[in-house]
Image (cartoon, rainbow, N blue to C red):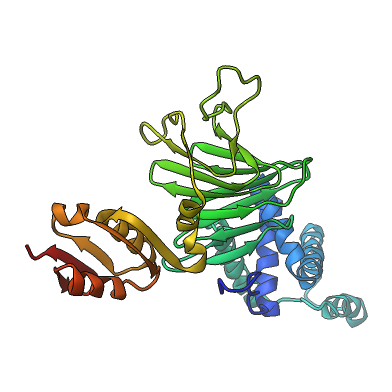
Length: 355
C-alpha cells in the first residue's frame, strides 16, 4: 500500500472462485464454532464486498441441500428384470440440474481441497495493517481515527459498540483519535495500555520497553494486566495521573513477561517532538546524538545494516537531517568530513575510525 495516500489502496477484485473458496472456509468455521476474533474477522469479510454475503448465502443453501440428500433413505433394490421408471427419475434430475452450484464428485473433492487451504490461510495470523522495513502506511480506522505506521510495524484492531482497541504487534505508530467519550480508545503495546478519548500520541515499542509521546490532549498509561497506572502519582492528586501534551513516558519491563516498572516521565520541547516525529515525513533528525544512536535509527529503515567497529567512534556525536531510507549521503559525509573508513559488504557497511 502506498504510504502517501490518505487511505489504503484496495486489493484487486478477487475472482468468484476465490470468493467461493473463502465462503466455503467461513462455512466450515461457522459449523465448527468461531472464536470472538474469528467472528469479528468474518463480519469484516462480509462487509468488504456485496458479493461476499450473496455468495456465502448461496453456498450455505447448497450445503444444506447436500445435507438433506444425505438423510434420504436409500431406495430398496428393485428386481433385476424391472426397468426403471423414467418419469419417476425425471423430476429428481430436473431438480438437481437447475442449481447454479451443482458440483460433480471431482468438483467436490477439489472444493474440499480449496476449503482446507483457505481455512489454513484464515487461521494464519493476519494483522489489520503492517509495514515492511523501510515502508510507511497511513491507515484509516473504522471510527474515523487514523493510525500512521512507521517502518516494520504492525497492528491488530478490535472495535465494538463500547470500546475501540488497537494492539501494537511491533514497531511504532502515531494515532490521531476521533473523540467519542462513550467508546474509549485503548492502545496496548506489550505490558502497557494507553487509554484516550480524543487526542494524538505516538507509541514506540522498543524491545522490552515502550515509549509514549503525547502531542495533543491527554492519556492514561496503565499496566495491561493489572490495570494500575504506570505514571508517577502526585502526593496531593485525588485522581489517577495523566500524561499530557508535551510529555513523554518511558516504561521498561524488568524481564520479558514481568510486571513493568513505573514510567519515567519527562517534558519534551517542540523541537524534540519535531525530531521524534520526523519519520512521518521520511526524515531522520539528530541533535548532537551519539553515532551509535544515529546508526540504530538508520538500521530501522534499511535492510543493509551499518556496523560501527570502534567504541570511540560510536560515542562521537552528530547533528543533521537525512532521508530515513537513504544512508549513503550520511556514509559519504563520514568518509569525507570525519575521517571514517568505510568497508562495504553485501549486507552491511562497516564504519571504522582511521585514527
